[in-house]
Length: 255
Image (cartoon, rainbow, N blue to C red):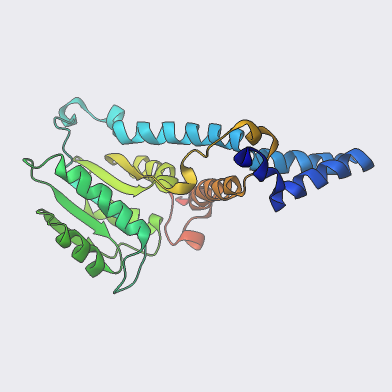
């Protein structure tokens, strides 16, 4: 009973009910639109449906190589083992490894352990290589590891990788789940044949939805939508803004 009733007393839900009361008292269309917007972006049941849609697409990216349908028959993939694992950097410093980076490396170690008998190589794109290398060496990862600074953002990283990697080979890119959509678009844009390994984050996991979730607001959902919107808008800026905004020219900006 406590878990059922307690959410109704949270400040953001009191604001929701206060806004509902204002709508009933003043009967202004603007208030109703504001109430509807607040409910739609904060409701857990609706947000979980979006999370399910996004995770479903993320799962497909993990299983189906990008660009494989456009590949000539002689370039078809003959093995499930990637020629190279590419771990996209996640910031940090010369001495510290951020949590998002360690999560990506943990997924990498898990995937490498499934192919003990197959040779594998790892490429990491980050400015601060040493903490990444130390983390992998502590876990006794026996593979060839290369690391270099590919750029200040994801778009610069992909521009560097497009010049560095052989696009006739099959790759596995490791990133966070809220970056997986954008990474998949960049893989297709640069004509890589690759799958995306998406590291699960708390924001994109479904939130428990009990009987009260249809009538309450959860601030976690606002964080989810903000990250999802940032993902889509970032790619839109790259496609239409070009080098002036991202430091890399998209083909839409190429004469």
